[in-house]
Length: 88
Picture: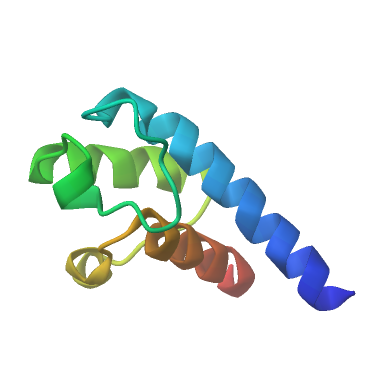
């Protein structure tokens, strides 16, 4: 049951992030957990930092700057936000 709740919460965080990132899509391909933020989306480093600030405000979390370069996919980003919410 707890795992199902965690998965549901992670999925809802992913859904919110995917909506926020929709404006950066290069094509009609859907944003998935495996979407590469730098390769598949039209985001430069400034856009990534702006998005991080939006996510921090929306989810009331703090994402350490040293973690940002390690986040490659949308799924990793969703997991980072999810983990940050658990700590908060």
